[in-house]
Length: 314
Picture 1 (tube, rainbow, N blue to C red):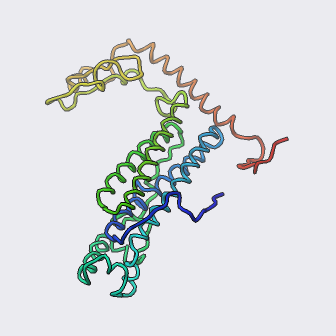
Picture 2 (cartoon, rainbow, N blue to C red):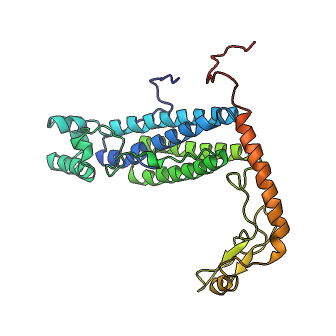
Picture 3 (tube, rainbow, N blue to C red):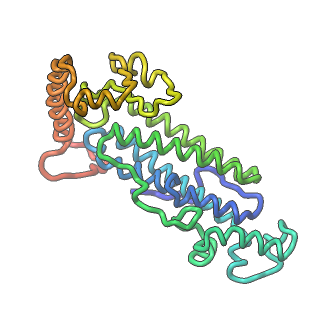
């Protein structure tokens, strides 16, 4: 159940109209890294977490709801940036407020044209109101959403989503000189950082959380680093020394072509992994049981009821 407050989470303000930037800001309204995408991603992820991880469900729904509030902030800012312009799209009035910040009719027409020619849907379909499309008029798409049904994978997707959104706000601030708009964008950018740390902290509470999913990695193919661009190659902790958190060392394959031929396409490897393979198979059986029981044990017997409305069970 959602309850809408007409007050924004952050007091968004705009000092003067800027239709060109309003169009660019659509990227965070209906773009792939925008607020709607984040809200829907966390909202859909929450359903699968409800019974086995009610605490994570609570967090995902809280952040999803905050993202909806950020969508409202972005939409309100877009609308304020178009103050006076919406009227121009419906009726040309030389005394409109936008004329006070421009040099004359030609300039007014140029700035409106520059904003709307980049995204004709802005003028043709919505007369300036924000639509669920990005800055190029491409409609919002559900394929932006990453919800895989495995909480550790979803949380890693969320870390990437918050990182991309943070960077978009960082870039957006380069395209406006309005101090009030920059203040709003800085708030939204900072909340992306806050959400990143929340997801990072939650991921750390889930054990085991690596590798993602249920099945363990095949030890025969885990350690190899294939040097597939041999000219001016670089080495570092990603291909030399101990693998992070694995307790084993990288195996640098300097000549992948010869190695693949000698091992008949990686099917004829040393037998020293036999014991490790047996351990992996046993671990897979254990993890299958644990993950399955985790969900089954959380499902109630009898009638399925999502909410108890605060009632105390007898």
